[in-house]
Image 1 (cartoon, one colour):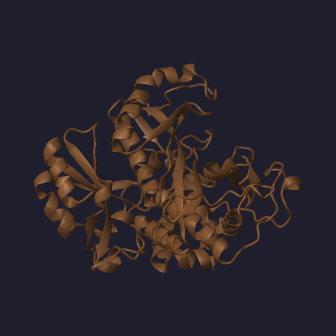
Image 2: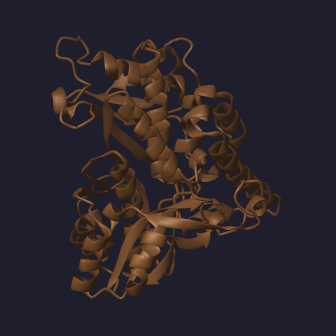
Image 3: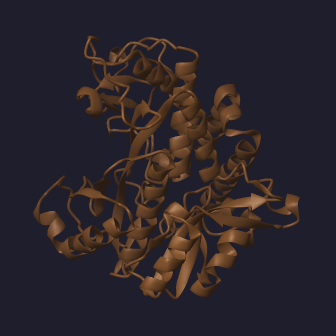
Length: 447
């Protein structure tokens, strides 16, 4: 779309306002809402927003040492929209929304998650490749007043379990396609109140845009209908963690020719696919904290709970970090099972692309497949790296990985690390006070 086309749509829909929105580092939507009559001015000249907006903590707290708050004198950024992301929000009265990225002193802010993701996709394009992908997200649906799950039983895919929220499902089916989310399936998951909705993939940055839109839309529609939808991984200590599986495949630049399948290969995988998987496995310890960023996410990582604990891959194997699905030319893809629902979709995409590209560029050899249970030591190939389980070790693995650190950039590593260190500090202080509910109180509303 162009600015003029959006202005025409604003007039046609009689919109009163347009929300200029961005992702923050945690994947939380932050925005300013502009009267429609000022859209052209703000879209073309930039909208002034606090530069540190995207570096705030989960509860909006300012965090030191990100590089974007006190270091800049609490400066403003100028936000510029991506016109192709404009949508009319059918669940809000006469309101539109457009996604933005920040600039500072005339340059894009290189630590911003959407900018980081775009940068990796641009590098991928120089290799003659494009990425088709979708994030599979689970979430918990809670009653707005009691903050308890809408159901109390544990019964995966039970038909009658979804009946009490059928009206809510219908609202999602009705509204999500209107903002570009092509819903495919809705289902109840393992734990009480846990839900999964899948939707069709998209090429390039639109995949992460769709997921950002999906998460924010589900949360808004839930709030307007008596629920709270939370994408925090484990809202309750004994609950099953909610995942974000990043399903993706490689295509030519035009997105016409799939490049991961080879009918002559015994495993059905092209050499490009093997290099790509090898790159992912080589850098899994480093990118884990990007896929499972919060303390709550990492607390969800447990053996025998369908969460990867080591750098393994396997054909259709749900116990592995990389689950490979071979279904012919257009249907062959990789399910990166590292992510939790609390991850930022732009960073999950960026981390996956940065790691995969290194495998292709350096022609990394594919390690042996795990054909058994990746949670049982005897079934895991020798010398398979074990993934870090705490913030300190996970951050150190990221910093020590020169390939990933260089790909994502020094500014990003500094900013991301400060946010994760602050979160660890919040955890430490809460535990010292004996606050057993701090994770729920800190994460459930906004994540």
